[in-house]
Image (cartoon, rainbow, N blue to C red):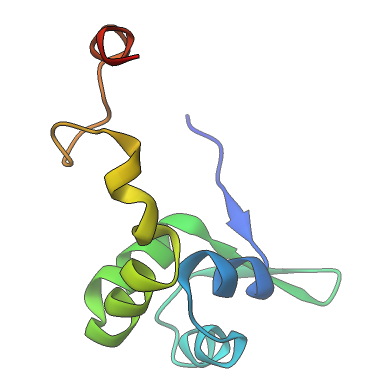
Length: 92
């Protein structure tokens, strides 16, 4: 069983390049899954990824202002899968 990764609203907004208000709207609309820990939202990272892929505006912001802007620098040959560690050693 893999551990569940949870992010705060501020972490999610920085990572995906959107405002905190946008993330809170997704919570209100129940588009992402979350838990409340000590009065703060902790959002499931996997549901955030699905949400960012489903919404065109969020997808564009993710790719231009958020984590998506770094994808080209990761040197991943097949973007559908994680790179093979031995393939990365040859490129270094």
